[in-house]
Image (tube, rainbow, N blue to C red):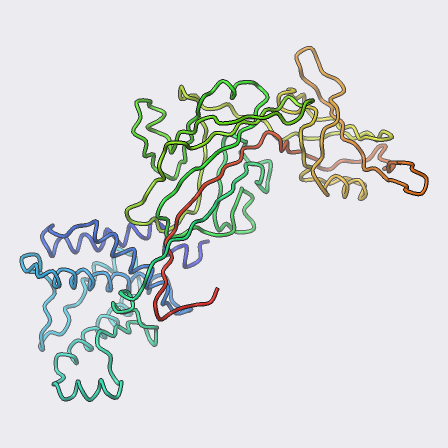
Length: 455
């Protein structure tokens, strides 16, 4: 379940607020108001409302306050521009009527159930406006001197912090760059339906979520740039591609391409450099760089990014083939200086080979010393002892830990006594085939002038 911050800045919530206000404004001003201005105004007021909220504020209260403040700001914008022909149907303020009530259609469209609270809020606005109109010059001067009133004070929630337009005008926005590092091997549950060429990342996910995740939600996104991707491959297929396409399901493509796949993709990456894992390994790594595509810029900042789902495509638009990177172990044999592992099924030597880096996952065996050794670090495959004519195998070896005796110069190895040991669960993840992504995301941060905080 999302917290109030995620819920308030969620795209669906933003769209609801925008649609409600835009419908109302377009009706009142006869389709004359520029909706691009409304998007910017709504976004800025949402940020200000959230930054000045009470700890006890609910989503409904934040939505109501945003609706009221945005409507007021739009009306003031129109009045300040002296566009009388656009303001003909704007709310009229006079001594008899006070502030015209905001249409309760707002309440229905944002699914607000506490109508009484909304009516209380609008009544407060009416009373405050009526008082302002009734005050004579002498009373205004007196009360301004003793500080008992403040013009344009919209204390819409009981004892809430001020969320007036002055506060909004004093809010400054600064840019901040988030350097995002993503690796397909960082998924917490290796058995989920992911692989190095198809995976997703969750931002601000709960600890119980087992996907690849980043602890922080990225908010107020102004632009996104995919800088580079490192792809490893032993099939010699990737090395044939001069470039690849990368698509992100949650972000609309913005490439104007003669290629259908190009038009469906987030960016095009050009092959730059390659290297081999080691002389004995069959694994090659390729770095694809973004050398020509500008960052994707959002005219109105994206409220938040909760998920990014990546897919990779060849120049012809063919999905880059999924790679198996997880293997289940059914038996372990203890040799003097190495351990031999037998998998439950045959694997291709393009999937697992000598010098590949592996980590053990979901490990439950009846030998605590061996379990601790296997889990404490990544391991290097030292040998694939048996390979079929079809270049497949079921076994691989890793070296044991060395025990060095500096008094006599001897090296020994631990004996684990694992004959007939029960294996309840044992999997490995091949780190050498994982995909690495670097992105640069520019965000906007609000900095109210009189609300400076040390961080």
